Image (cartoon, rainbow, N blue to C red):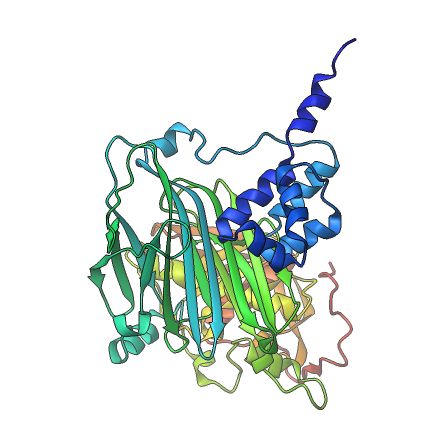
Length: 500
C-alpha cells in the first residue's frame, strides 16, 4: 500500500490553528480569555488551537473580530478550507541578506492599537523582538512624534511652540514580557515640543533582563496624547527588519469614523494600501484593523480618518455639495487665499516640506473620493487645503497619479474645446470652460531639476485647472463672456468620462 505524502502534509499542518495561536499570543490572551472574548467554550477553543477540531467559518469570523488581525485569520481559514496549507511560520525566520545587514535586532511582530476616547488618544504598542546579533541588547529606542496640522509646518510649529507636548501629558509606561508584571525603566533621549525619543531599558524593579543573542521577548508600552496635539493620522515607519506589521484603530461608534490608508516612502508619492482595512461595527465601538507581512525597510504606512459624526447634522435635507467639501477640509471660494499666487518651493532644499504637502494632498483626495464619484479624474492644489505652497496632484480616470511642484503652462497647442468642469472649492455648480487639447507644463522635480511635460485632452484639462489654482485663477475666469455656471442639479455628466 502506498502513502499519499501530500495528504499527510495537509493533515499535519493546520495553518488556521497556527495563525490563531500566533494572534492569541500577539494580543496577549490566555486560551480562557480568548474563549470568553469570542463567546465559545474554552475546551472547544483549545481543540481548535491544537488542531483536533476543524474550525467553522463562523468561528473564524468571531476569531477575526476578537483578535483584530486585519484579515489574516480570514486568509488562513480560506487556505485551510481550500486544502493549501503552508508550513508553520517560525518566530524568527532567516532574513534576506540586505535586511540582515541592517542590524542585529529583528522585529518579529509590530502591533499597535490606537484608541480614541474623551478627547484623547491612547496608544498601546507591542513588539516581539529577536536578538540575531552577537551581543546582548540592553535598551530599545522609541519615538513619539505628533503633528496636528500635517502639510502645514508653520501652523504646527506655532501650536507646539505655544503649547508643547509634555511628559506629564504623555504618561509613558513600559513593560517587558507577556502581561504587565515586569515594568521597564526608561530615560529621555530627545525632548522637543512635538517630538520625543525615549530609551526603554531592559531593567526595572526586578533587576536587569538583557536580551541575549538568540533570545526573543515581548515589550509593550503605552502613552496618551490629547486631540489638541494629535492630528487625524497615525503612521508606522519600518526602521528595523520586520516580519509582521499590524495596526488597530478603536473609535466610538457615535463619531462615524471613515478610515483610509496610504503607503508612503522617501519619494514624493503616496498610494492607497494594497489591501483593504478591516472593519467591525459591532457594539458601541468601531474597530478598524490592518496588517501586512514582510514590509520593506523605510516604508511608511499611514492611516488617516475623518469623524463624520461631527461634520454635519443628520436632521433636515442633505447638505449642499459645497458644505460637504468644506467639512472635508477644502477651502471654499469665499476665502481670499484662493486668489493668491502660491509660494514656490526651493528644491531640493525644501524637499521634505514638499513631501509633507503632497502627503496632505493625497490624504485630502482619499477623503473626498469617499464622498463623491469622479469619473473624469480629480485634482487638488495646496491652496485648496489651506497651504500656501505651489504643489498640486492630479489623479487621472485611469488611476495615474501626477504630482507637480512649481508648475507653469509655457505652451498650448491643438484644438480648443469647451467642456464642463467642477471645482472642489465651489462644488455646487459646473461651468463650461474652453481649454486647449495639448499643454506643455514646466515644473520642478523633487531633486530640483526643471522638467517639461506634455499633457493631452482630458488630462491636460485636469492639469490646467490645478495649475490655474496655483496662480490664483478659478475656472469662471476662463469662461466666455455671457456664459454662466449651472447648478449641480442641472448637470448630467457626473460619473462619466471626458468626451473627445
